[in-house]
Length: 170
Image (cartoon, rainbow, N blue to C red; front, side, top):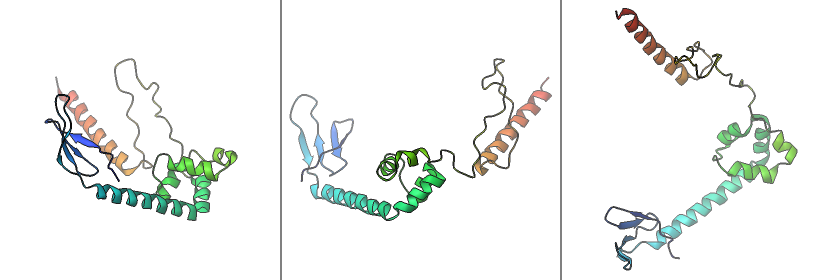
């Protein structure tokens, strides 16, 4: 089987195929391509076989867990189901939904999973104040993700330092 080369070409017009490893010189003028090192075409066949085997394994996994995945979709929503079942983001879940669910079931998939409150916008009067100043700093919340809490504390500390510096500057 022939490799469908995917060359990475350097500044000297020498390309290396990322699939089989063939190295070729691409001529500056319209001469023929010069093969400097032949590629290993059998390695691309092995990669394709492994990839196809992986696809078949995932398909069997999804089909074996079809009922549970559908139940999670209808109760948890798309994002949580993808995370729980290791379904990659992209076209996999929509194609499973199309095959497995009716229109009514697809419409019933929750967009905001249970147990998570909807994100409320910051109560700032305007997201872009016209006076050139930033909107008020939000109040600290224990319900935020720990990384957000840490970032809030860092920013608050920096703002407090700046305010102290401004207050002491004549």
